[in-house]
Length: 186
Image 1 (cartoon, rainbow, N blue to C red):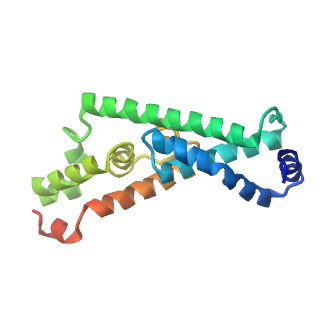
Image 2 (tube, rainbow, N blue to C red):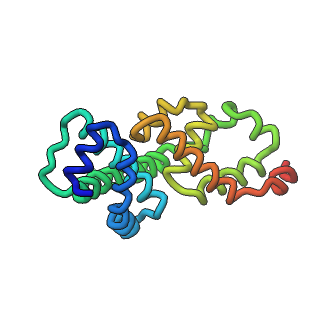
Image 3 (spheres, rainbow, N blue to C red):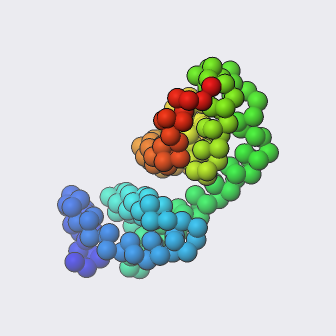
C-alpha cells in the first residue's frame, strides 16, 4: 500500500491500515536504542507518533510532503528527545530536593510503622529502577497524584500513557523487591 493509499484509507475510516505503519518501527527502535533507550521506550514513542499522525490526517493537517516513515521517525525522535529532557530535569530536581528525605514519613504511615529498615529497602529499590520510574511511582504512591496530573507533570500525552508508564514501573519495582524480605523487615 502506498503512502497516499494509506492516507485515503484512514480518511475513509479504515483504522486497520494503521497496522501497516509498524513496518517502519525498526529505524525508530534502532535510533532510540542508540540514544539511551530500549525496545519498550521505542515502542512507546512510536505509538505516540502514530497517534499524532492519525490525528493530523483526520484533522486535515497532514500534507504528504515526505514519506510517512520519515514523518513517523521525526515525530518519534522529537518525542524521545522530550522524554530524555524530562528525565534529566527530574533527575536534577531530585538531587536538589531529595524527594524521599523529609516529609514522606507522615504521608505514608504504612512505611513508618514497619520502621526504617523497610523504608531504606524501598528507597534502594526505587533508586535501582531509575528515572522516570522513581519519580512517577513517588508521585502516584507517596503523593497520591491523579493520572491526569502525572501526565501533565511528566509531559505524557494522556492519562492513559501515564498509567501505562506507572504499570511498567511497578513491574520493574516488583523485580527489585522480595515479599519475603518485606515481611521480615521491621
